[in-house]
Structures are given as C-alpha cells and as structure tokens.
Length: 522
Image (cartoon, rainbow, N blue to C red):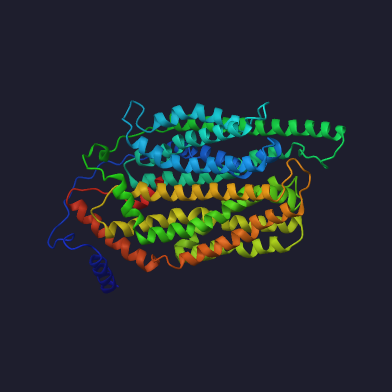
C-alpha cells in the first residue's frame, strides 16, 4: 500500500515543470486562524438568491415561444428574430457584465451587492412587460425585443455577482462548499417552481384558438374573450414570479454579508484578457469538452423550446403540456443526487455516455408512436432523468479541464472566469440559434397563429424538432466526447500533481484559488 502511494506520488511529481519541487524544502508552519463558520440561516439566505434566475429562466425557456405565437400573435418570422437576438444578447452580456464587475470599486455594501440591489427593481419591471400585450400591433416586435434584451441584461447583473458572491461569504473552503450545496438544492427546486407556477396558472385559462380561418363572427368574438383571459393569466403568472424574485433578493441582501477577502488586497498583476483567451482557446481538452456539450446542450434546448407547441399541436395535449413539463422537471430534480453518486462511482465520462444517451430510445419512441397520454408521461419522466445528467455534468467536468490547464501553464493565473464565461457564452448563443431556426422553420411550413390545429407539415416539423434533430445532435456530441482526453486515471494524476504544486506554493507564502471552488462559483 505504501509502495503504491509512493509510486503514484512520484508520477504526480513528474507531471510538474522542472524547478517547481525543490528538494529539502519544508512548508512554513503558520499559526492556525480561528475559523468563522456560517450559520444555517446564512447558508439558506445565500441559497435563496439562486432562485430568481432559475424561476424566470424556466418560465421563459418553456413558454415564451408559444406565448409570442399564440397569445401575443407575433408572426413566426418576427418571433424567431426576438428569440434569437434575445438569447444571443444574453450570451454577450455575461462576459461584459463580468468585466464591469471586476472593475467595480468596493463600497459600504461591498462590491457585488450593489449590482444585485439596484438591478432587481428594473429586472422585475422588464420581466413583467415581456408578458404584457400592448394595444398597438405595428411595433410589437420591437416591444418584445427591447424588454427581452433588457431583462436578460438586468438578470445577468443579478446572477453574475451572485455567483461570484460564493468567494466572499466565508474564508473557509468547506463553508463555501456547504453553502454551494444549499444553493444547488434551491436552484433545482427553482426550476420546478418556475415550471409549476407558469404552467399551472396559464393552464387554467381557456386555450385561445380559432377552429377555422373562416370562422363566424360569433366564434371570433368568443375567441377574443378567450385570448384576453389567457393574456391575463400570463400577467398573473408574471406577477407571482416577479414577487418571488423580489422576496428572494431581499432575503439575500439582508441575510448575507459580503466579506473582503485577503486576496482582494494582493497586488498581483492581472493577465491581459486577450492573451488569457488565446491560451484558453488553444487548450485541447477545453475545446473538445465544449464541442461535445455544445451539441448535447443544443439537443435539449430544441426540446425545451418546442415542447409546448409539440404537445399542443402534434400530440393534441393542449391542456396537458404544463403537467408534462412539471413531470420532466420533477424527475430531473429527484435524479440529480443519483447522477452525482453515479459519476463518483463510475467516472464522469461513463456518466456522460449513460446519462445523455438514455434519452435517445425515448425520443425514438415519441417519434414513432401515436398520440398516447400515458406513454407521453412515461417518456417525460425518462427525459427528466437525462436532463438531470445534462444539467450536472458540464459543471462537474470543467474543473478537471482547468486543473489540466494549470499543470501545463503553472505560472498563468486568473483564467478561470474565461473558461466558465465562454462555456456559458457558447451554450447561450447556440440556444438562440436553435430557437431562431426552429421558429423560422415553422413560418416556412405554414404555421397558423391561434389555430386550434396546424397543417400536417407543421406537425411533422415539430416532431422532427423535438425527436430526430435532438437525436442526431446527441449522437454527434457523444462521438466528440470520445476525443476528450481526461479520464478518471488522468484526473487522479492531475489531482495529486496539483496538490503537490499547491503545497509547494503554500510553503513559499503563496495562495492559489482552487479551480473546483471556482466551478462552484460560476
């Protein structure tokens, strides 16, 4: 046993650059500091701050497309522009807001809290106006595009500093990890809450549709009354979610105190942004990991964006799609701890292959079967299991890539935000492309706004967007994962080598940030 450990340690040391490990050096003994632990109340207050982003994100992700087409009556081409530009702008704002925050001065409230406090009231106003149908029809596209982009900017001004707040709630890594566990629990529950609130409130309203384009005046009057009820239902759901947003922001502000850490006062020279970006983008494992998850994320985003229309028109479950969404999200919530155990027990690459590929048989079943509500619920629960894996695994594997980068570039620091922000950038931009193209394809196939039924070409297109297109994207992503070089053996070697590197840096009086900790933050 001792011999095996010595050999493993020797191989780890061999991974370090020459001159890092000096023979005969001993770590400097420092007097231990008194640890200040976070109370359960502090952790809960911090965790609640993660709910607004997830609640609003789920409501927009699942319902915005069908709302624009059938409630606001925006034509499909204009809706595709709104969805694409809004998501693309959301992708751009992440690195921009992160850069602005990094240049912000410290105030009496801290450096991060002012962003959270002052963005909240503007964000809830913009969110509410997304779900408001203006009286004028000529400028509707500009209205929704403006407030969608404005909300995405403001919610980024909330979520980016909130994510970075993990570093400033405690000086102890164990306390930060514990707070992050609370946060992840609340965020996953937030996805269920957002789906439930939006779906159940909107589902109570009559579905606004016209049975025939040549319908009588009486039918059109009845339909106008129905669509007004649905508009009010969307406004009610927006009001409830906006209230949750405010309550969570208040709890976060009152219950968490931002601490200025010692590394804030260090006079370390920041690496130029473009040099760091060039180094990150030339790191092979990062490119391969991003490419794989880009395709798999795109697959699940296609399902998310088109699921409501698919259930309403292709399957004919107009009054059930909100319950099917709830089944998916509840299943994902329950199975996240199972996937956490699975990747620990069998390895992360194995978890990727098993977790993400498990959706393929059920998507094939949906493509081939006739409309059946019971089978659809079974498929929804199974899809939730795969969604949980897709949600968890990227954030679990990115720290391994950063560790590998640190071993190959041991003197390069401060690149962690680039790794995470550009992963988010690529996935959000891909989401905008997928929603824009899918909505545009509905326009080409003759989508009828407010129709109780759609032409066969539209139904077929929706089926392809929710089943066959995601299957092809998943298979491409899994093939790309075959090229990903960091397996469990490589990960263990990197961990031991990094531990030796940190001990050497500690003995020299330096302190480096753990990339796993940064994974929890971002």
